[in-house]
Image 1 (spheres, rainbow, N blue to C red):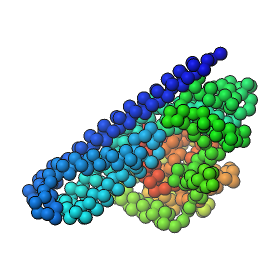
Image 2 (image 1 turned 180 degrees about the horizontal axis):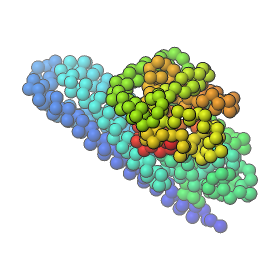
Image 3 (image 1 turned 30 degrees about the horizontal axis):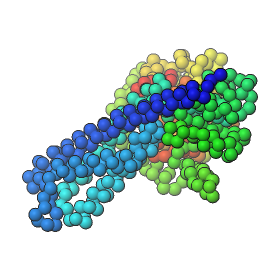
Image 4 (image 1 turned 90 degrees about the vertical axis):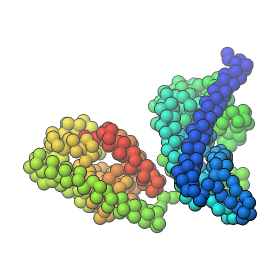
Length: 495
C-alpha cells in the first residue's frame, strides 16, 4: 500500500517539475523579449533619431532641460518589459496556444504608447514623432513573430510530452473520454492526461473507453491518485455525481499555487471569444454568445474578400495564364470546368476550376464507386483516379486547379475562407444538423482543408466545418489562409 509520505514526496516531485519548466520557459521568453525590444527601440533610435542632427535629445518646457534619447530608449524598454509582465503574456497557461498571448502583447504596447503620449503632452516634451511611430508598431510585430517562433518550438516539445501540465481527469467515463480525446488532439495546449478517476464503474475498467488513458480509482480517491501520479492539475469533467459540494472539498485539498483545478463545462467546439465567465450570486455563470451571420462583421468579411481576391487575381495572373495553356495543350477539352455546387442558404451556383479530368469524367463516376479507396462515406475520392489527366495530378497536388474560384469570390458566390462547397448529391446524404454549414458562404479554403483535406473522415469534416460556422472571425480567416499556404506546399491529403 502506498504510504502518505510516499504520496507527498511524489506530489512534491510533480509540483517542482511543473514549476521548474514553467520558470525556465518564462525566463527564456523574457530574455528574448528583452533582446527584441533592445534591438527595436535602440535600432529605431539609431536609424531615425541619431541620423537627424536636430533630434539628438529632447527638451522640456524649461529650456535648460535636455535628456539623451539613450535614456528615453532605456526607459521605454524597461517599461515595455514591465507592461508585458503585467498583461500576463509569459505565464505557462497562455504560452503556446490561443490568442490571449498575442492580444496581451498588443494591449500592453497600446497602453504604453498612450502613456508615453500623455506624458509627452503634459510635460510639453518635444519627442520625435517618427521615433515613437516606428518603435511601437515594429516592436509589436517583432514580439509577435518572436512568440510565434517560441510557439513552434513549444509545440514540438509538447508533442514529446515535455513542458506540459500533468492532468488527472475526474468525472464520468463518457465525459472524461471526450476531454481526453480533445486534449490528445491538441497537444500544443500543454495538458498531458496521465490518468482518470471515474464516478461509476471504476472497478470494471482499466482504461477510458476509446483511449489509452488508465483508470485508477473512483472520484473520491482523486487527491490520493493525483499525488501518486505526480500530477499537478485536476480537470473536473461533466458529471452529475460531481456535485458542487464534492468539487469544493476537492479544491480545498489542493496545494495553493502548485496544484490547479479546472472545470470543463458540457461545451465543446465553442470559440473562446464567444465565451464570457460572469460571477453572479456566488455562481460562476458561463455566458455563450450565439453566432451572428449579419451586420458589420459580415460586411468586413465581404470587403476583405473583395480586396484580397482582386489583389490575388492581379498577382497570380501569370500563373493562371500558364496553367490555362498547360491544360489546353495537354488534353482535349475546355480549360475550365464549371461544376454545380450548393452555396449559402442552400442555393446552387457554378464553381469554377481548371479542368483536371477527362471530359467524360462525370459519366464514368458510377463505374468507379466500388473502387473508391479514399474520401469518406459522403465525399468520393480515389488516390489514383483514372479520370485525372497527367497535368491534372500536378494541379491537384498543389491545389492549382482551385485558383479560378478566386473569380467566384470576386462575384460573391464564395468566400476566401468557409465550409467546403458540397455537390448536390452529397447534400442529399446530409443529416439535418449538417445544413448549418449553409449559414455562411462556402470557401476556397477552410478548417477541414488545413486539417487533413481528403484524408479526414466525414464526421471530422463536418465537425470542423460547423466549428467554423459557429466561431468564424476575420482574424481566424487570416490564420486559416496562412495555414493553407503551408498545407498546399506540403500537399498532404491532396489527390
